[in-house]
Image (cartoon, rainbow, N blue to C red; front, side, top):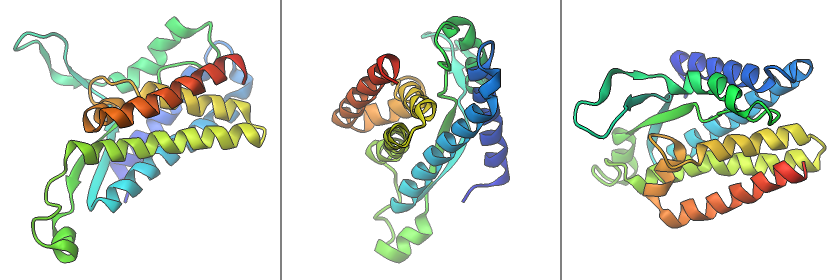
Length: 210
């Protein structure tokens, strides 16, 4: 299920990434970019929610926030800085020579186990806790659907859609903070290494072929 707050957050991120991606160079294709980013983000979220459901848990999407800015105790913001909302726009200043290449890792998720359903199906305590491996599986589902979408998009004649899928997967695979890549990395290093290799191959393909 997606609540009203999640819908608002997802819509905001889609708009910010789309506008940032088309900023300065691609306004004529803004509708195409917006449609592509909408599909990419929605598929990513849907895949994660489906995987979470299979693991008898629920996730809630939110904007990626950074709370700590240093390594010393106390070096943190009182309120998390909404990096996921600002980085797409700010990154355009850095990546402006690269068409449509902007920061896209803007959404993260919180998770909670569906204890009562787990109790009904498997016994009271079987799935009352979520492990890091489970978090990795949920995050992995979003990356996989984007890579598959990139392949499909390329072969049916939508190269920009394919390229945007790869960019989205690339940024979300970074093993930092609360991003999907970090969840996958600590859930299973082997799984992260395999997916990272696929994403890097996809990036080379996107840069030199698409």
